[in-house]
Each structure stands twice: as structure tokens, then as C-alpha cells.
Amino acid sequence: MNTLIETQVRLFVSSKSWIEGEAVRQLYATAKLDGVCQTVGFPDLHPGKDSPVGAAFVTDGKIYPHLIGGDIGCGITTRAEAQASVRTFFCNLSE
Image (cartoon, rainbow, N blue to C red; front, side, top):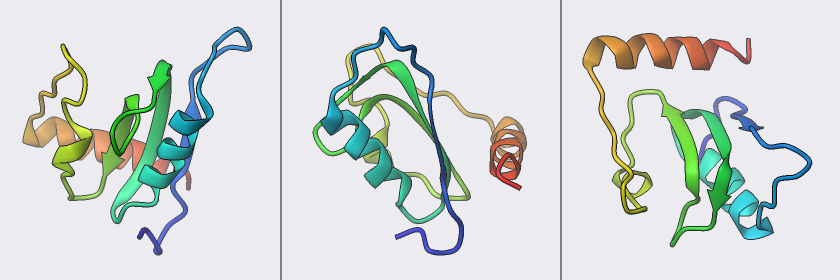
């Protein structure tokens, strides 16, 4: 459980978006994983098996394989330099 920092959770949706309550619950539950410093839900947010689909999670040095590729057509690309700068950017948003 993430006990060192309060993870910031954001939803990028409009008042016309229909988001299932289970997807929001999964979003907040996943935000509590150790090392998660930023959690974002997008307009296509929907429940997954254990974590939501249509979300992005920025972690501080941790990789959670179950958060990647749970939806057909989803994927991830990362580079060490980009990962460090993105992590610093998002983790500093709450400061």
C-alpha cells in the first residue's frame, strides 16, 4: 500500500461521460499500490479484471505487469530517459 505519499487521482471526463462506478473504485484502489504517484482515468475508463482499462499510472521505480495490456490494442513503450523525466514531472505535480 502506498503510505508515503498521497497519490493524485485525476479523471479526464465531461459531464456527458458515462463511467461505471466499479471502474472508479478500481482506479482509486490501484492508486494505492506501492510507488504509484499519479493516476489518470480517461473518457474510455471501464472496469477490468483487477484494475481499470482506460487509465494511466505513473510509478516511482516500480512496474506492475497486470496494469499493462489488459485490453486488445493496448500497449506500452518506454525509454529510460523519457521514463525518468515523465516520472519527475507527474510526481512533482502534487508538490
